[in-house]
Image (cartoon, rainbow, N blue to C red; front, side, top):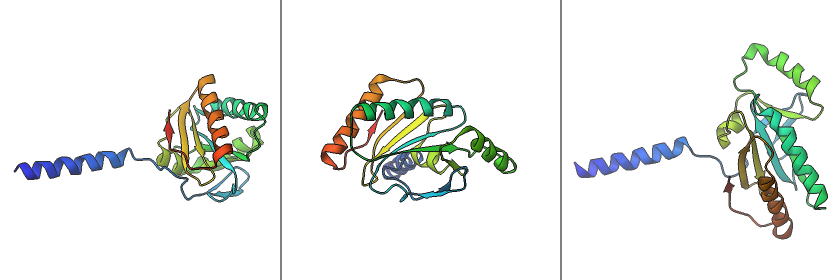
Length: 179
């Protein structure tokens, strides 16, 4: 009886952990932007990858954070190649509105934004709703930083800039930092 309880609790613990598991590397994917250009995990070779992902409510924070990180990157005169990638979580959009939503993105966003109709990224990386979810991947596509943000926070900008500098000086794999 005691042995069966232990087996049950271990099985339950493993099951619960799998519910909250997240990827620690860049997932394999094939997603189009609003211009129907296809992107995969290999689209940004030899670049550090910064992903800004959100649902509709979190989208208002993406540009603020992307601009802050880019301006600080320029100010620091870092010479590492960085790709800034936007991902729209559109998994809640009904199929019959896809064309309308794509047209909206064409009007509102000059930059290509990957349109994640299936929620691949939010599911893989446990995106927080109503937030800008920032993922940072090193050259080897290991996730080294993850955060969910709203208003601009100087401390988090500084953390990300420090990681950029660390990547520049070492190009080694770094451990994931969840903030």
